[in-house]
View 1 (tube, rainbow, N blue to C red):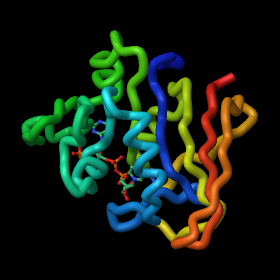
View 2 (view 1 turned 135 degrees about the vertical axis):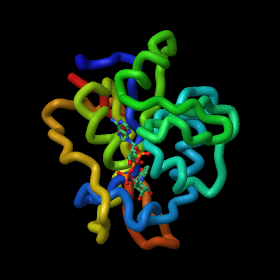
View 3 (view 1 turned 90 degrees about the horizontal axis):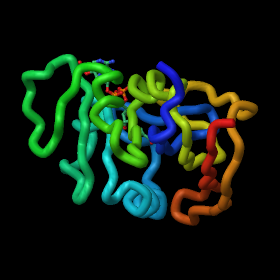
View 4 (view 1 turned 180 degrees about the vertical axis):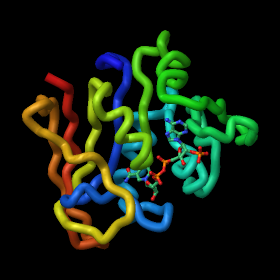
Length: 165
Ligand SMILES: NC(=O)c1ccc[n+]([C@@H]2O[C@H](COP(=O)([O-])OP(=O)(O)OC[C@H]3O[C@@H](n4cnc5c(N)ncnc54)[C@H](OP(=O)(O)O)[C@@H]3O)[C@@H](O)[C@H]2O)c1
């Protein structure tokens, strides 16, 4: 598949590209969850089945949910289930921007075709069992960056928005 201008990825990653462990997130960053809500509200979310099941509650309000799974007979309330990334892309073809929200397996498949990357980068390594694909920063142009410090966690993190060159 070629680059899709309306497909964006949103992800929170550690310095070592770690994104999850035991089907959960690696850190709790309330401000990042707020940012996620602001960016994605009113939009379509595309996710793998594990990520849906990792949410404390679904569907997330005011967002269309597309879940990728081979178990298409499973019924996830408030979600549309598709069985391939092609089908997900086709379902959002008329939308201005749709967000791939994880997890590892789904990010790996969408990374080569996504046009934008909304990154929350925690400047610390984490032990994990799921990783984001290694980012080749030479392929991406930084559009905006905001550096932050989280007192409770005691680490620095940055919001960095990239667009594919
Ligand atoms: N840091 C972050 O921003 C972030 C964001 C989201 C998730 N996460 C973390 O990531 C982890 C989950 O990631 P994951 O890699 O285990 O799972 P995932 O990508 O969420 O879901 C994987 C599942 O999606 C389905 N799937 C994926 N590609 C498919 C395809 N091409 N065709 C058909 N089905 C497909 C399969 O479901 P079936 O088995 O039903 O076929 C597969 O088992 C959790 O730890 C979560 O907390 C982190």
